[in-house]
Image (tube, rainbow, N blue to C red; front, side, top):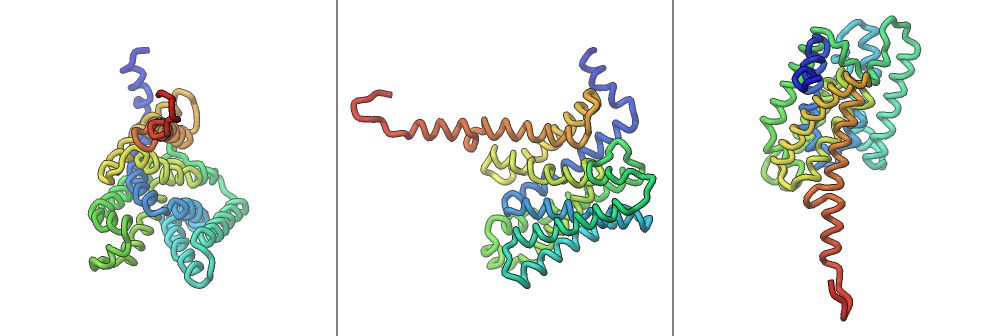
Length: 292
């Protein structure tokens, strides 16, 4: 099979073309936000929000309203609840996050298990990008565009907030509002990615691109560009891999991202394992009388 035929064959099917667009859009939004999550140490918060939306999605199905509405309400509610638990107890942040998101995730699983349905609600957990409807397709693109626009519009303030919250406050920035904005965008991003890869794998898309780009560069603008490029590339690779190997689309995308991270972990020019080994070896003291 010639290369052009190989590339064109999956796109002959409308559902594959739609899946590619939705997955690329979700991956792009997740990759941009992931850079801030990595810098601020909020990776666990991304995990929490992605799991906490499950009861909202299940209740939205029961009520007959869009999944995105229930997901966003419970995602934002989980963030608020975590803040309440953290501010009214002596528990550390990771403990508060763990308690809230596991509780909400269990509530969601309980609702799904007791809800008679002709729809396979396991798609909520694992994604169903090949079955995206016209309404869901438009929803992903619109919400993705809103999220990207908000992040890029406030990128300078958010970047300063991520690197030095005290300095940002001293310059007159409302750090509490910036924190709320970032968490709200996180909830919206989870809604965007939910249809593509499902709740369980969305956390990988919110962490892996940023972590990979962090390994490759020390400059934040370059980190944003690298994360976006890696996400788009791995989304395309994952879609094609899932078609030709008849594998889960979400899992294929995440595995492609993990493969790129592994390469960066090993071969990144400054932060990679091999580079660190060379630096340590170069600076190792030479015993008296020995030659290198």
